[in-house]
Length: 499
Ligand code: BMX
Image (tube, rainbow, N blue to C red; front, side):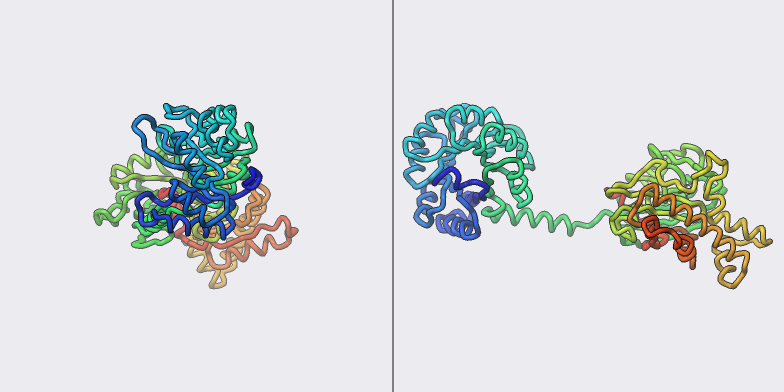
């Protein structure tokens, strides 16, 4: 064997779980032959018997070790020169040994001298860069990251990729080993500079791999905690039990605008009294939520006491952990993750009592004021944009026509041919189209998803698209209707709370 034989190679460590049903010479030989047949460059084999058995079956390079528990030292991997010599005689090409700076029965120098005298190569299993430095100074042919995480303290989950890179500064003969339990991690070890990569448990410890799969399956099958999701808008309050995107026991109440948030929450609590039917509460509200406090930005859309302690109030009423966020931001997340956003960059617009929005870029929902498009212009020109676009504005147009109608009533009037109603809806759609143009220039999202009672109203999206159709292709936003409809806020806030 030459050192170069290992270059960019995969080494399979065939070490069954000690005492387990695979812990036999036949199994180890079978693992070894299967690994070589599948392209492994070399093998790492534990115990004199198993090295002998594998040597008899293949000429592939073998890194031999013996694990021995001792009273005089924590060093377990090939602790003595006698064992090192015996491994050479059994047929190992490389003998690996613990090279940590702990109390030890044989020095690294003596081990290397013994193995060298037998004409074999040496691999120092190190726990840190200092071990590697000393082992190389003593003449080790290879240094391995094998002992990182196993020389004291809790064993980490991840492999020590940083140690690979650090060792590579000292020598090209770095063998990456330890917790490299996926093809991705093995590849990363090579990118960090490893000469070759040793993979053990993930290939030859059937019990471990089975346990990984079992716990993943168990976790996926475990019941998802149910969330009581509440969406408080300027016109309606919706609530439901939500698991993932599944919504049940939904109720919708009219927002009693003369009342206060405490009463609204208590009204919802009355509908969900079955003990244990949810384990947390998630609330989306019209207005700004920061530090668990809720304030109106446009009291005409919905007026709440400034800085209302929303989370505290909800915890008192429902008695479970509670999360809260702006309604349109919550709906944006719902559509992004479970709906029309398709998990790509998107902006959500709700054309509703007011006009709200949410922005999801690179998988992140922007919080705080981000997305409050309905308030554009409110500081510079006094009048918020939503005041002449929203459902409230449509209702005011009905009033101007001498009628007492809700926004829904205006859509009904338009459907039955009333010209003033058609004009009002078209004017609103034109302004939403202009907003979409600005939003596209601000964020260049993959899609603008439109929801809210007006946004989802019959024909509204078509009018917006018609208005945009003259734009050059590159500037033209891709519009999509909210797929979760009026439940986007409930699904979104529940998902956010679950995270
Ligand atoms: C307003 C503002 C936003 C809200 C949007 C849509 C308040 C009370 N609300 O711009 O926070 O997202 O209206 O609200 O300032 P909705 O009630 O129409 O859903």
